[in-house]
Amino acid sequence: MTSKPSKKIALVDDDESIQDYLKTFFDLHGYTVYAYSTPGRFLDSLLKIKPDFILLDIHLPNISGWDLLKTLRGNNQLKTVPIVLLTAKYKKTVDLVQGFELGADDFITMPSDPEVILARVEAVLRRYQWQRGEEDSERVYFEALTLSPTEHLVQLNGKELKLTHLEFDLLLYLLKNPNRVHTRAILLEKVWKETAELSSRTVDKHIESLRKKLGSLGSRIQTIVGVGYQLKDSS
Image 1 (cartoon, one colour):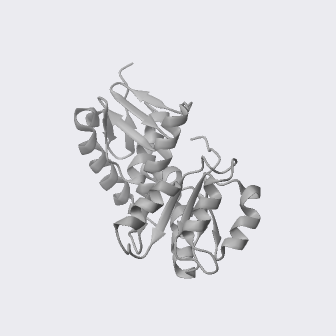
Image 2: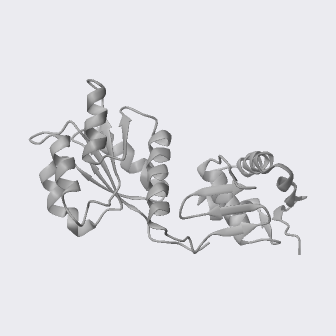
Image 3: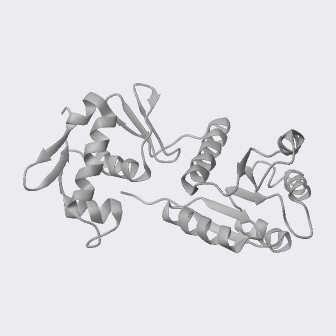
């Protein structure tokens, strides 16, 4: 499976615990996170790192998130970078309206489950990619199935399939290596990036779940008794 440059996320939040857990979580899912506790440090390095996405706390020391958002949207080099605002609470509906009018793409109430935060970030990224007309050169097709690594999107008969991140990575690996027999050990190494910590039963459970979600196409993931699994194409 070929690698690609990771998306860069700038995280501006003065709460170090939030910085730590979001940075760790996004790193595990292939993103590079640059965390900043103050607006000044963030602005000083902004044009150097050129982020693909900005997560911005609206309750910051010295400068409000609203003013920082206005500054970012007034910069020609940054006005097309997606920005999602992090907030502990909304004082009133007008806060939401103000945020969207200033150019925010979404709001996330903190604390939130990191899986939800990731899903919101990726949804905004997909929208921007669609608006820019960006093509996905890594898109993979398998009969009625389409998988886009760039958009992290799987569609079957034109309808989106909801896969976990590991199910997505497992399916992508199988699609890029059809008709080959993969042992459980190989799948743990290539997909989970593990060689000893996890049991082979972990692979079995994910294969079972993936088959169910793929419907009739799931039968193409065949069990090779005593060995592992194989994605069989129609050729």
